[in-house]
Image (cartoon, rainbow, N blue to C red; front, side, top):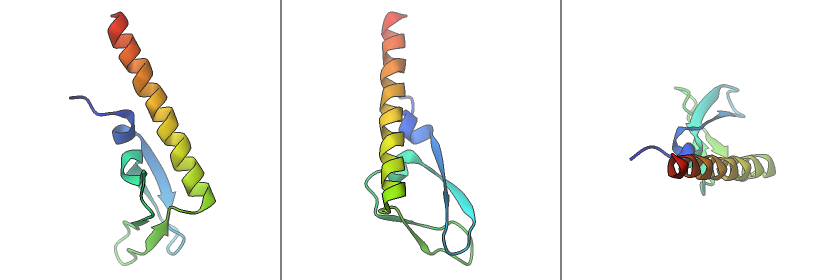
Length: 78
């Protein structure tokens, strides 16, 4: 079964503690309150409930659903 867009699309998120950016798939961010920084020696939580992150993850989720619907429509027309 092919991966959905939310499982493929990467979101670059910056840790407020160390300032390093890491990439997470959108699917791993949906419904989460926080994720841990990937930087060795930091591992501090990154809050996903800030208005910015919450709005951005929701928008990315909607766009992924639109992409998946478009791909499914293309497959039906083929």
